[in-house]
Figure 1 (spheres, rainbow, N blue to C red):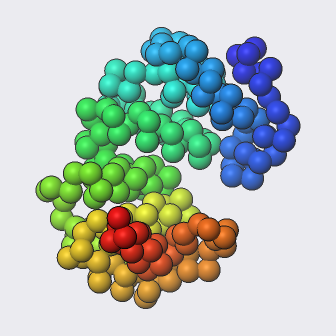
Figure 2 (tube, one colour):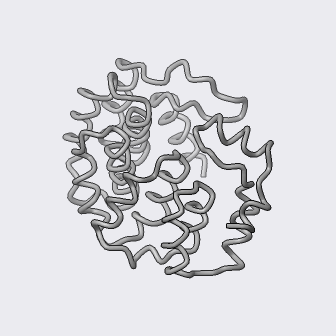
Length: 214
């Protein structure tokens, strides 16, 4: 914790706080520290219990993802206040855990929109890497019915799933684009030059074009 405190940078904190993350540690320096520590599950658990955002990010980097029980991951997700902690926990830990599918189903149906967004992130992972057994038409039905009025974090996760269905599955591409055009979610999102818009019709079209160029 003393070493993390020494890495505190007011400029980094200012940037991070714009995204809802209450810490001031440069992520490159955090990753370098994690690389030095290597995997230490017990230390990771102790760091998590501090409730400090930088410490929790470090915990995620040095933990053993497959070592967590299902209920422990459920509690950790609900404790993850900062968006970056939430995202890293889902992407670096839950996706590698044997309980990920069980948690995907439970979280997707959770009344807490932030928890539900984690379920959608796991669904997007399956859409991309393991779509067998997923009813993609049914997933699109839910997105069509619920995405427009979903809270921000949940809406963003559902929109990502919509885009990935359109990008990865040609048979559903026209419908995915049509849903995006009708709902107009993130249509006016400010996109820096050189970056792809998160508006699903543009996102899908651009990524498919790149795939065809390869």
